Length: 175
Image 1: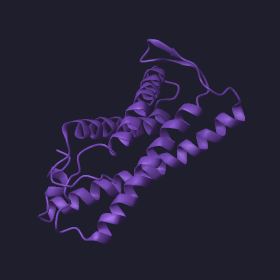
Image 2: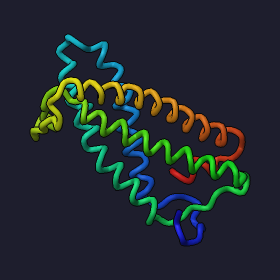
Image 3: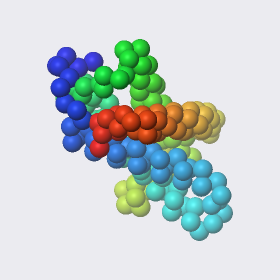
Image 4: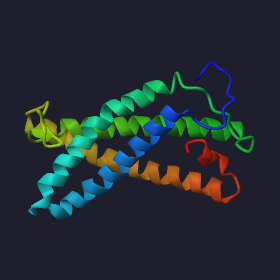
């Protein structure tokens, strides 16, 4: 993807910040999305629902920046222990990961059934006011969240596998 030579042992600071911000928001929002079902009818539901929608709203442009930045960031060397085939597989899985994140974020916005205030401050109008279309995007959102959760678990498991099998350079690339 990048045309310059891969010499760095870890990603640049901006890439690492984008990674951890998006990771934190997505992990929180996914967990809270499922917890929200248990909170329905409680006084906490609206607060956490608006927080989830607000985080998803700000995560979308951050994710777009992250996606675009990867074409310009400095390259990072792959550890010698990773075969060419595994590298290709990881690149493909990351493409699916990015696509799934964007589907989750966009479908989450398009499924909105009512307007809300971003972090309780700025009004955000739902883009679609057709219940059957909102429901369609709700279904897309639900299944893409399940896929995202599975990819996320595989991602973390792979990093942990390499880290605990004596190859911590994979994790160090993003720390």
